[in-house]
Length: 108
Image (cartoon, rainbow, N blue to C red; front, side):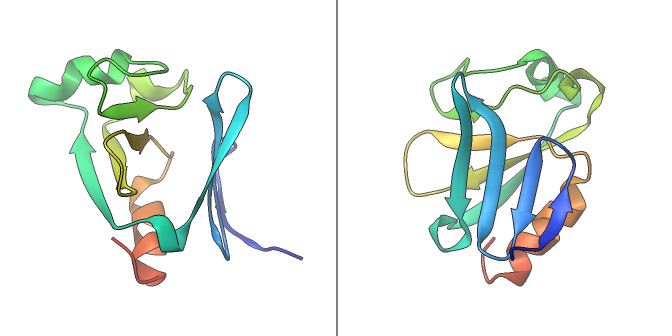
């Protein structure tokens, strides 16, 4: 049985990796911790405030945002470096907790 260290309904962190719900139009994306090379905190304030209105998809062909209708009310995103040009960019309800979990797995 897999235990969830974090689950806010959109982002799930379990023993093996992260599941990003509503990443693709057809479903979730699974990212093993071993695939994560680093994590960058991206403030959704100041000059980046416009990014909080990116509800889904990409506006710059670098960041890919999962569907999150609550993003306009959030102040920070996590950009996951998975070794590819396009980086999954997520907005968990508790970004600090998710970043801590990834760091605890030896990543980020």
